[in-house]
Length: 214
Length: 214
DNA sequence: GTCTATAGTAGGATAGAC
DNA sequence: GTCTATCCTACTATAGAC
Image 1 (cartoon, rainbow over the protein chains, first blue to last red):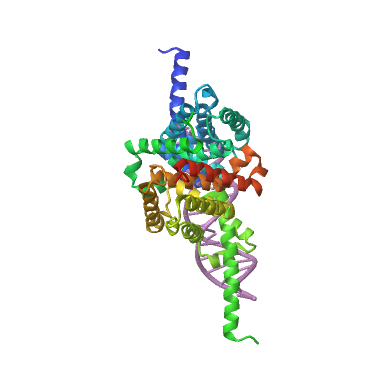
Image 2 (image 1 turned 60 degrees about the horizontal axis):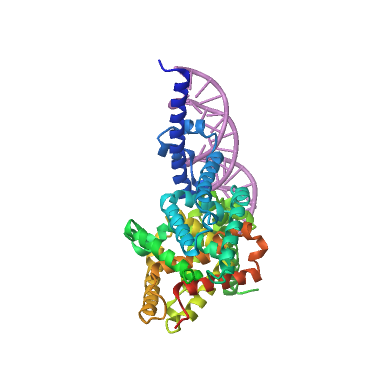
């Protein structure tokens, strides 16, 4: 009935859907148990397929782990280019940057946790990608901040350590959410509470660099 | 020759030395591989004893892991009481607090990483201790900051999110050192470089809350 | 493309000699 | 207290039927 090409497309779409379901399951398990603690069985179970079928789609655990990591790093690098906004004033740029980073922590908490596990473990898999993909962007963004300093728009801060602060602070809302939930009560960081967190972080960071003083 | 009691003491001392050597080895392996990735064999190897002998001192992996976690949490809670300094002005208190926290990241990087792995994984072991030991101190410290705000010493910030920022920023110098080394060059965070980091972080945080304006 | 069965291996833990 | 030998479980990965 259906032509060969149409059939293939449908298959391809199904495959894509299943693969992304597998990747989301893997993300969750790697986030909770780390690489070694994650079992292919558990990932398959969450994706509602058999372990053997999982291996059909992703030949082994290493490959699956690598895919999950590349996915989250790709999203991060894609969404976070301070450079794009270099025309804008520091306050607008930083507000946007922090908002995006906080949104990533809210929308991809498991990816963030997998990334954190990986870096803490010494980045055995991700190291080359940090060098090739993250470092160039980091250096461009440093230059943007330096130009703000030269123009007197913000305080004479250390740009590298400033970025470390923004990253660690915003990412902690994903990585350390367990601790925050314990200390504040879980409800304090959902819905409205998360907006308050975003506002608080933005305010602290803007004051930290003296933005908005013109 | 030696009396019974003296002998026992000597044994006890040797035991203590060996146990702390084991704990340091375990800290390192748990930091690099997480709980599941760490093998008792590897820990024993680092401590220069046999796996079976390791089990003689620490009956199983869970127990060893728990000990390592309790040790680092104990050190942190012990050294970080903002309350103790509530008599001092905000700038002095915060300078001291950040300095201590940065020192902990430098001196106990592996402990910090084990802690991070644990929290990211949902704090399955540490949760009760966070509730019983960390939370009360957190609430006292929140009150100290609130009193500063009431007296007009610092900006009207959100104390909880302020602490999250300080913790995540300072701990990232232990947990995310791999990433920092890649981005800045490893030499940039040793010796003098670490002092510069401490200075940069302190400045950013003091400005963030508007301390020192009196 | 999905399943059953199973090979292969790593690692935690125990028993018992010395 | 330390060692050798061994058991047992959990998990990755492969082979082959359907």
